[in-house]
Image (cartoon, rainbow over all chains, first blue to last red; front, side, top):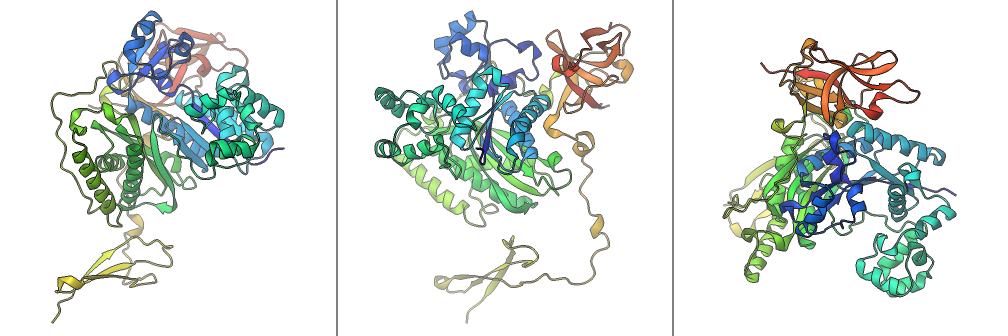
Length: 427
Length: 171
């Protein structure tokens, strides 16, 4: 039986795929992308996965292995990734208004209202569309719950015979997909739980789904029970989930009515920026790049042409609401077009790094000082969330960079799509 | 005697614009600082029309937008810079910018960006002797054969990166 379905559109090895867009010579060549400051591996092409280079490996540890494998190494280029992500999301949005951008390279589409017998054909067409327009390969997983859609997307990525699209709409199919999925790979099962579950003989997602629900609730609590329900086909994550931040932190919302006025957008963007930076601080992370996207009302004429995004790079990674809001508003000014009826907007924070790895100017040695900074932050958050926040926004004087700290990104590719001086060259 | 200052600020109304045209916030500030009060009242609850509408109202437009003119599918459009002289006969010179729209289907006669020898090159797409080929607009460059025409094989599947929709040259 087919009920309502979700699709998860997941870009394959997104950063590595972005590096290939203007480099046909890199097709089939192993690629890694390093985190900012060239610290560790944050993206791997399939060829690199095959070499056995683990995700998150410190660069210095795998350097020899990468060189021996002829791997092409890139510093991260968030201007490019942000722009390519905006393109993919724009295509999704033109396909359906029911898009929930989940991370820089993943989005859910609510397929409620799609005739079940055409879903696979539609998703194949969408996948081909994204590939043709942007050259980014995606996998699409379809399932009755978000957790199952995520598992389906993983199957679509791993099982090449599926042609990039996998739908879990029957018991047999769902069970075999769950059986192929390690329980630790299931959304909402953390690393700690993975170990304990494995110790208890629960190895696959199917093992987990087959446990009595009461037992799951008793042992793992409500969140475990939700995951259990989702695996068994009952929607338990109704609202946007807020899982741990991986590569990006996004805050966005559809407006209840179209917004055309810049001031109103500023207000929304400032709110999103504050929310996203709050989450960032909660995860003890900082962002180096801020991207703002605006989606036009798709029922307006020329609306797809009106979608836009812009990216701003901070001098220093920050989790400070004011800095992030300033960056977001600067990006908004770049992305905003007069006369467009916007339906949705959002802020994505990219180039995330752990706060403790920040340079001294942001890292307070005295915890007391840090607390004060935090209190100031809260006070500013309060002021800025007042209705007149934008015009009267509290600013902190521009922070001067201390010392000669610069982000190391020796191997960054050109910002092909956002810098006039770095455009791709054709002979 | 108290001195009342009234400030009026236009706000974006949260209701439908048809119902409420404007909500004003009135700050009544007394000269005894202690009992400052702020009251928010809806001053108008219906649309106000006064005088004649400007005859120019219907014609107010933004500036001409070159993006709008040159780019019909922003998500699929990329801008590249020309680095060679192989297309001078088609009016494409070194340092020109090309607008490349990947949503356009490559067809014979179109100027395309192709992936050749690991790089990107601009050429005209043609069919000759049942084969797709890339032809320069400069006699110094020989045509490049790319693939035979086979059932179901489109040139974009292998070699064509995108279709050039316009060129931009600064003098």
